[in-house]
Image (cartoon, rainbow, N blue to C red; front, side):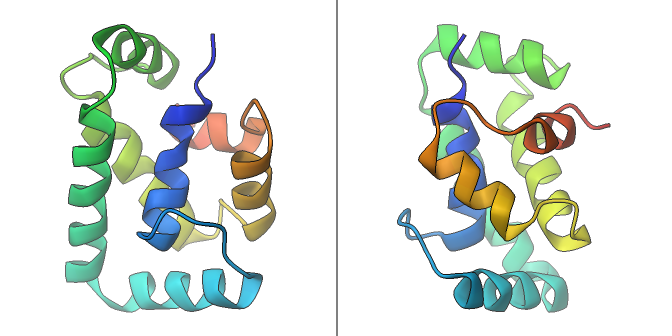
Length: 115
């Protein structure tokens, strides 16, 4: 099962512009999210919108990975990824691996699963 497209939520949250970024920019965005609950809310809402546009099959598959229901999947993974980013559980290296490989690293999967 390919969930790389869904894991692009990490890139959506981290950048909001959808393209690769430097470590310096990643850290600046992380700092902005840490200090602004409203910015975090906006990013999670945009991530949810992005994730909800996937095919029903992809949504079901990602919901299985995230241990949630398909209707809750967009919010669940976006909020978990945001929390992982702000807490430092997700690193710049995780971000780079996610956008440059066919499969997300185990660290990202664990965050998506809420563990």
